[in-house]
Amino acid sequence: MTKLITQRLTNGDICLADNYFTILYAGEEQSASHTGLIKIGEIEDKEKLSEIAALGNSIQLTVTSA
Image (cartoon, rainbow, N blue to C red; front, side, top):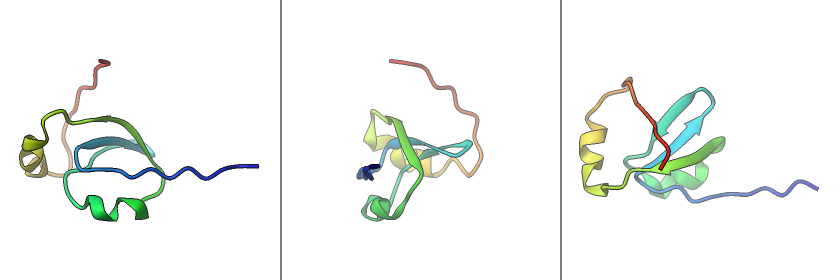
């Protein structure tokens, strides 16, 4: 039997969605409606979310392990 696992995503989460990275910066109240997102990390400084929102739709991102 397959068990459906749902997670509540929050602002600042970094997710993998198909072939894309997604950084959630607003609207965490609607996060339960999103499917197919896998949380792989989070932004440490939540005060920087407004700067992230201003980056645009396409950026180059480097990801390192902690």
